[in-house]
Length: 80
Image 1 (tube, rainbow, N blue to C red):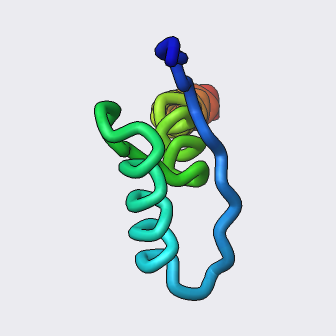
Image 2 (cartoon, one colour):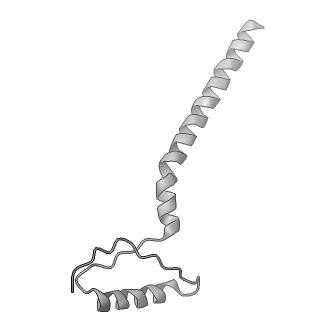
């Protein structure tokens, strides 16, 4: 049987007992392709990881925007 490069397999699991479903999928995976490791991540965790840098940049910009407003207020106070 020719080796096929499996990239990703997406599964939708019900919110019941996720751990038992993962064990069932792991068992089926080992039966189908025993030489490939079974590794999984959840889609919401991947989305959080992808947007983590954008969230940090947003927080960074908010700090500097607040600093700019503070400096502008000092300038207005200096004019009065």
